[in-house]
Image (cartoon, rainbow over all chains, first blue to last red):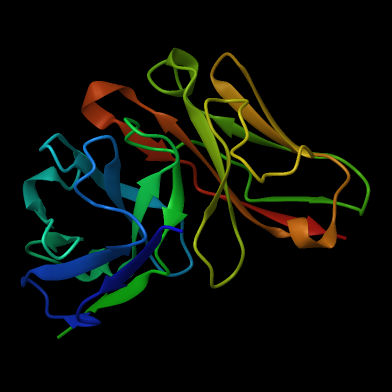
Length: 122
Length: 111
């Protein structure tokens, strides 16, 4: 069964870069059929899609975050990473990594990590 | 791109049916048959309940159904159970530029 686990610092200073990793087990991240995604949820608020990408290099980003987002894939470790630069308090959120239900789809996420809370504060 | 509009709350008694709406524009909900619904219990990750407006992933009870009319999508939960009490979020494909947007969420209370 596919499992995803987010990890990374829980506290980031304003203007610095947030870095998170999603480790995948029970499935190969290098499968060219599936996309992977990042979604975040500010405390007490709704969901916001950050971006979706495939191992083969196709990427789709939320236009409001695109200039600050970078994703990396490390197939040897079966994990992928998110970097969000120039963070502010508005980036404080629970960050989820996820995989869509169907291959070739960039959305309709049915496998999720448990989420990791990142707080932006000095 | 603005978030999709959902009512902040909805409620129903056990056994009843409740419908949650999700209103967008012709650039998202109205333009594509690509609306999904997620259920989220407190402290847990969202769960995909509906995709492609009407389809249910494997394991989702038939009590959950989706529909769409124009730029408004709806999620109907029939035969309400206590365990259905949760937050529900809709999402829609929004074209190649915006790609994916979510609604603000609806808190469903089972009375």
